[in-house]
Image (cartoon, rainbow, N blue to C red; front, side, top):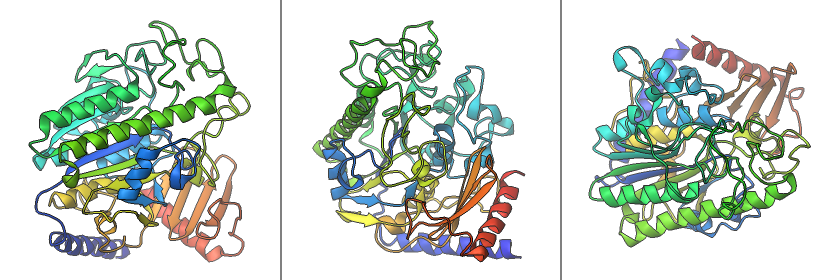
Length: 469
């Protein structure tokens, strides 16, 4: 009964929203660009986020658009977030809760046919929906949703693909950590010279140049700033060679983490962040020069939080999640609260900020609203879990109240309003935090608010029952 009522309210809210928004946005759908950084922490960027890196272009993007202070990746590691972002659904519905391995025989999304079911009907991706609306679509960068040919981005709605399919690759030689070439042009290996961050951006600009006369969707999933930690000036240092195993996490010539000594990593990471910033600036400059900026929505964020260290004292200092507790792979805020900026000149108020609680899977329903497409049946196989953030972008409304969930094999977190329940399933412990009063998650309030603990446990159990069907 309660579940049916919630579904009815969800449908009603979305109908009202679609009717309202058709009167507040232009009838011509915008070009859409999603830039996903890799392992970029909440405290890595300069400007508002307080990082040491000089990031004038991203700062300018925020000054011309909207900066988010409570935006989250749906996962605390690479593959889960990418699944949720592309499908608008919890990654648990698709069985991807951990990073996919680098084994070339693992199909990843292609294993279930992608996101896929019998007869190659599959859960639609963001690119599928936008292609249906007449967009040219392209993916450049890090896929990490399966190395197998069945999992190739071209099977998931993208007209063009150039990049790597694994979890990381050398920024110069484009070899994965197993020593295999991993740089593709559609379905074929095709090496491109240059520093990966630069190459991804250049591919994106070329795609725009070829498709600027029609709506386009460009998904740039940067490898930066994931290891191996290599700056643009490191091409003269040791780079990966074909046939060599680079799975070691210890410093040395065969380390997956790159050619630098541990004490050099923080400075190298700053140089990588600044390279990413320059490339965002290059893309924005091109859009403005071509007169495309006024009809382009660009969303910049990260796939998860940053490492503070790697293997404890082995690599004692890496990046920053600012005031947040935790790091990549865990479910404290540092693992999944990430920098995020939306830019759409003339549509998003310049210099605006949002403290709404938002997540990666909210982008797909936002794009459906922008392109006038109805949401999938909320009781059907392709139902979405995310909700459109267009009211937030246009300052016409707020997000509806909702409960959000993050889960790894080791932990689960439940968020409702300011309250966050965090269960560590390895230690067998539960904590309750009020994030409005305690963003650093330093005060466990479960003894003071047992009724809230019980409420969030109820939501947790119901959600897990649905996800684990």
